[in-house]
Length: 155
Image (cartoon, rainbow, N blue to C red):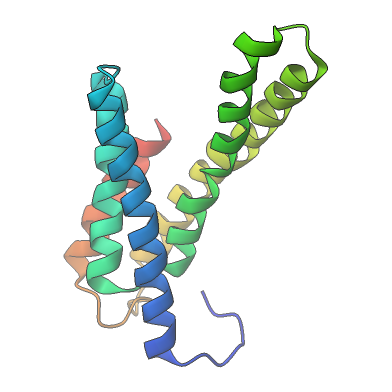
């Protein structure tokens, strides 16, 4: 996505790779902890597998900053979910703080996960097949491989 800003491509690739690596580590640790606590379900595992797959491809190509950013933005709702999960059994469901955490979770889930994922899936699908290729230096089959996984993430 062109922003009109002149950014050194090597620096930009490094930032993209590092951001994707941080997200990948978060997903990996979350997956391992969930396995350790014996709370892993098939759908939860597939959800994490898809996003780890995105991270690997983004790190390999060091591109798709916009896509990586939107995937990272989705985790914003996790902050409020963790607050809700932590305090609901300590303060009770009638607590104003618990209600606030749930409201913030619901709003951020709708805007960041449901709207954001749908938006980025549609946008990336459209951009990935533009001619000439928007992502120079990236194998077209990498982009074609990302699209069905991204669309599956929406469903």
